[in-house]
Structures are given as C-alpha cells and as structure tokens.
Length: 639
Image 1 (spheres, rainbow, N blue to C red):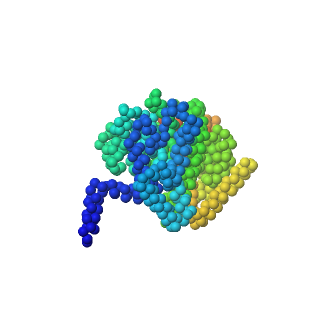
Image 2 (cartoon, rainbow, N blue to C red):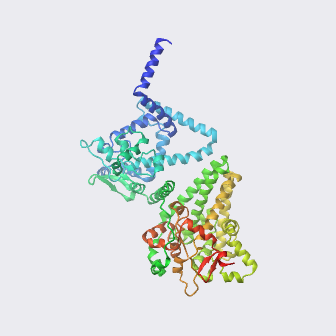
Image 3 (spheres, rainbow, N blue to C red):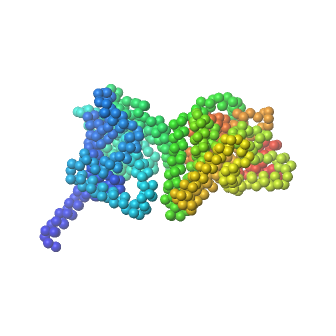
C-alpha cells in the first residue's frame, strides 16, 4: 500500500472514530428513513432546527410551525392576508389538504430551501430513492394494488403528522415572549405540550408526545424520553394534554395579546370533524384499555330487584325523565355512520390483500368485519325507531342505505320490531318479534309436532347457528307474512337489489373465491352474534310476563329487558344495545346517548344486570313456569 493511500485511510478512520461518527451515522440513517418517509434530510433539518431555536419567541411566531398572528395584526392585515390566514387555520386545510400537498409537492422541490449544496444533495437523494421505491412496488404488485394500499396510508400518515405537529405547540396556555424577556429554556418547557397518549399510541408516535422534554434537550433519543418522565414525575404536570383535551385545541385560531392566550373562535371550527375525531379517539382508547387489561371488572347481578321496586315502579315517570336524551345530533349520527362504514370498508381492503396467504390469514379480519356488521345493524335499528335524525325522511334514507349493508329490508323489519316493543313483557303476546316461549301447561297440551319444533327451536344449535342464517338468507329476502303493504314491497326490492349489487361488485373486484372466503365467515358470525344479543336481551331467569289488565309497557320495559354489561370494546361493536332496558323505556334515544343515561342515573345499572359469564347460563332456559313466574330448563320443568 502506498504512503499516500495509507495516510488517506488513517485520516478516514480518524474522522469516523472521532465525535463525527455520530453525525455521519445520523446523516446516513436519516437519508435512508427520509427516503421511506419522502422527506429530504438536510432541508427538513434546517427548517426544524430553526423552529427549535426560536420556540416561544413572539417576533418569530410560525417559524417551522403553523402560522399564528395576533388579533391586532389580523385587523390591520389586507383582504388577501386575512383570507389566507382563515384558510390556513381551517381544519380541512390544516389536517388534510396542506399535509398532503406538503408531502407531494413541497418536499419534491422545496425552492425556498435550495440555497446550499447539502440541500440540493438531500433533495436529489430523497427523490431518486422515493421514486425508486414506488417503481419497485408497482413492478412487484401492480399499480392498482399499490394505490389501494399506499394512498390511504400516506393520507392518514400525513394527517396524523400534521395533528401531532399542531398539538405540540398550539394549545390554550402556550407562551410567546418578546425579547429581551425571552429565554430558550423556559419557552422550551412551557411552550410545548406533554401529549399524554395511551401506551400503544406512544409507541407508534415514537414518544414525540413528550415534546416539552424533547425541546428542552433535543439530543435525547426518543426511546429514553419515558424514562425521564419516570425519573422526574413533576414533568408530567407541565402542559399535559389528554386525547379529549387535545380535540378542544382545534377551535384555537388567533393570539390575544391582552389575555396572553388564544382567542377562541368557534366559527372556524367544524363540529362534524370534532365529533368524528372524538369517536375515533374514544375507540382507540377503548382498544388500548382492552390490550392493557385496564377494563374495569364487569358488574354481577347480585342486587335484589325488590330493594329498588319503589324506585322503578313508576315507569311512566322515568320515561319523562329520559325524554331530554331522545334529541338526536345530526352531526354525531352522520359521523357514526361514516366511521362505521369507513372501518368496514378498510377491513375489506385489508382482507383482500391477505387472500394470497390463505383463509386463516383473513379469518381474524372476517371476525372484525362481523363485529362491524353488528354495529351497522344497530345503526339500521336506530333508524327504524327514528332515533338517529329528527327528520323521518332522513331516518328512512339512512335506514335503507345501512339496511342494504346489513341485508335487512327497512319497512318489513321496522313493522315487526315495533310490534315487539309494543308487546314487551305481555303474557298473551309472548314471542312477538322475539323467540317463541311456551308455558309448561301449553307444552303438555300441545301435539307431538309442536313439541318437536319447539324443542328444535330452543336448542342452542338451531337458535344461534342455523336459524339466524336461514332468517338472513331466506326469510329477509322475501318475508311472505309481511307482504301486504306497498312500503314493504318497496323496502324488499331496494334491499335485495342493493345487496345483489354489493355482492356482484365484491365478486368482480376480488373474485368469487376470495369474496366467499372473506364474507361467508363474517355473515355466519354476525348473524350468530345478532341472535345471541336478541336472546339475552329478554330470555333471562327473572324476566316478567304480565297478564292484562295488570300489564304496563313502561314497567315491562324495565323488568322484561336486561342490562347486558359488556366490556367497552364490545359495547362499541354492539352499539350499546346491551343497555336494553333503557332502550325499551324510550326507543327514541340514540344509541350513542345510552351510556350517558346510565352515567346520570347509576341506579339503572341495578336493573337485571348480566355480565358475560352470567349470560351464558341463560342458554339452558327453555320454558315458562307459571307457578314460579320464571324461565326454567326442560330438566327443571320435568318435561
């Protein structure tokens, strides 16, 4: 080896083994991960370090962050500037359009940042690598599958990135200080938030929610930030934001110099978006609680009903108390429908991509799809009660739409279900809109064929597997006993044509075999779950059937229906239908307001509570004992 080459190698290793090793490693891995995220390393580094250097400085507001002006600056600004500012602070621009445009266009050629050779280099490396990765994926899986998978991922990721960037500094009690009073350390701590997320969201976001500590010392690796909070718990109390609190920051738009806080402008907020975010966040929190085993213990039905008879004897009075809850919120209802159908569609996309791995890979997705179908049916159920919207027309249109997805004709099911509500707990009308119930005497006096069909109907195999599938696939397609009204014919035609169209579209898009592999388990599980929920809502040991004229619909709603106390995630999938006694007391209360009723009137939790373990015991109940006034098994009845 020549002396010149040896000296060059020595200088090379000396440089790499000195303090510059870390810088070189950071740059190398920064370019690699920058290609995957579509972000030029040096361009973003410059703008982000500038943001760190001037955080909380009043005369440098908006550097590396969303633009913020004061009320006086807004008043003195021209028409173009005020219009642009309102547009920039609008939620749709802020969390959807702007991040997508930033990712697709600005990062590809950030002209204001192309002032150094390092910037040109990083833009070139990022774009070549980014285009190469896209081209490779298109060659491997094709253009259409690539767009189906990648487009939603990019849109959601950029929106989440914009949201995290926003809540880190745009909160009500943030600070901006004018020089010379401004100092870096104080504003780093008090001009940034501590976004207190569930553990799994902390993992996905790389602990960036611990943002005040990050600004105090940006050289701390992300995986060490939780340890700092553990060592110094007082840091958790500085500018703490929960998921719920963070949603309130969306309404903050302009800085009030007099109050040294944000001026709250509700006009610039969007109720639909807020409510949609609340639903998604609440669902994520519920999932996190389930994963981390933090769901509170289920209640046991150990409170004797007679202790509360004086409280609930007047059902009519309770119906009056619950009347304020029946007013629907159209924005919330639309958000619930959009969220449910959106998640259902997302599960379809995921399942289709898993088809090449075999049916076992799609089965977990089919189970989740079954849960979403149950929730879609609850939306349909509320429409038939006129509970989702004030307008009957809106309820009917929405009901037909979600009825197609759940395979249920709107007017046909509405008629039979309202009869069930009208006859709840009435002895002479047992089984209307529900599973048939005979008394011991009726069974003894029946002919052999009726006894055989009754035992078959009450068997668990028929009740929870065969019967619900036959009901869905045959009876709901042409329910002969209900074809006496024009509205019934109309709803059957709409439902069947829509369902055939849905199936045909699914077969055309993913193939017959793939469609059957995904959809068949989902339908079987969903119908079985629906049959189970329908069963436990009224078929329990201490239910009541009262003969006329002693029967009162308000009291029967309490005593002939259960409170099925499910974990939070199952309550979400089943649309709170387990709070069934309250639903029967006032069927106009939207499903998303039922938990609030229990919160405001905790005594309602003590009426016929069933947890999952106790509900399994109801399977053995088959026949009504007039002497004991309760449901018993065939064995207990001596039959």
